[in-house]
Image (cartoon, rainbow, N blue to C red):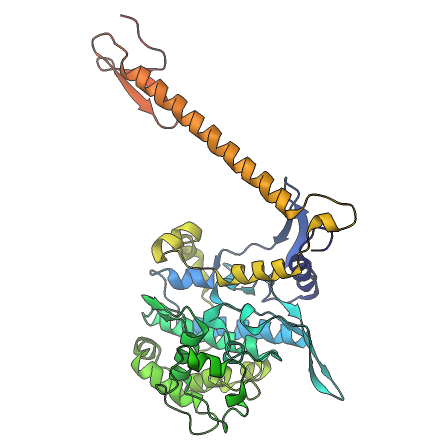
Length: 423
């Protein structure tokens, strides 16, 4: 905390003000809620990519798939040129508007984290968070899962590959994240996610990933459930594209049949999902990949989505359709904020401590619960009293849900009234 203001929020505001790109959501201003909490005002986008993929009535053409992937890569490349790691690229953080503009959002755990030095080359920050405290689990790169602390822009490129794979699987009828496991049996641990990555992309060897066997968490995972004997091992550099092709011909055959996926598609995904981060494609390399020159060309059909957008499930509707899912990003953000936070009473100027605030919040919640209980008791008493009331012949009594009171109906004339009729 800095003067009671979360450092993660300050970082997000500073990063958003630094980034000026067509595919990154724009910040308009920082306002305050009636309670005094900070509120970031950003441009309006109609839906997220996650909501679109979960909407069963809307299909993407292959030209639109290309369009989305290329714009996400364009935004990622721009961030990396500025030395910024997003650290939570996911379908829920990719928005779109009716004009077909793709907007990357949610920079709550992003960092200005690296740069290119003429003498020393790539230079990364040294005080970065634990690798397994960033990026939602299904989009977390393999080097992060295995505890590599000197991570860099390759982690965002991996997330782009996960987004591309998820789009293809969902459009092929298999609604799941690419490395998240089946919808009925999702991967909930780093070990199970690693195992699925090795199954889909091939198990690396020292030749394909120098230093793989010495990664900090590999031995621990093998001792606590990671089954390294099951996935087939890679035999050479670049084998990922062959493994991914086999995956789509078997597990993801719906997407392969719908779109007739080409070798260019598998080669691009293989580059984005290369297990060795040093050999992984950069966002700039991916943008120049021949895949985007193949037909059909990348294009967004705005006329179609202007009509269809109103039917895309959002918020609570989507949660009811798909079930409540744990929000890894929010959990990670809370953990980072706890790490940064200090009791406010220790800062200059005093103020209430976190314990005092928690006590006040608890009292307020108890007070609201008590008031709600009293109101319900009053309504029950009113209803019970009304049920015993005697009416003239031809009159009946009914409860109005909107007004929360009784009204009286004359069955002979069809008229209604609020006050009780006299005999």
